[in-house]
Image 1 (tube, rainbow, N blue to C red):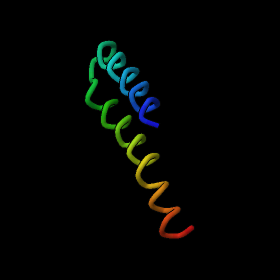
Image 2: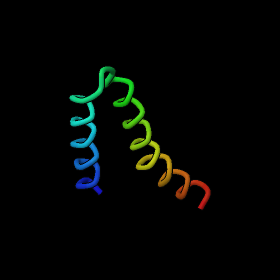
Image 3: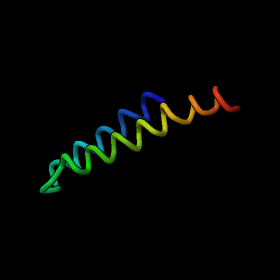
Image 4: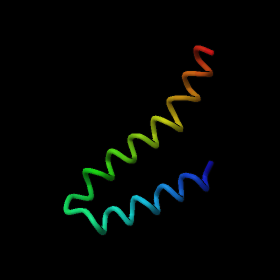
Length: 48
């Protein structure tokens, strides 16, 4: 899973170089990654 996160982080860094407002896309990307990694397993543990 960490390899996937590193790959996504690399894509995010490339996007920062190309976009005029990188922080906006960075926050969205981090929110998606956080929700996918943290919230899904937590929900499975609590309600699964």
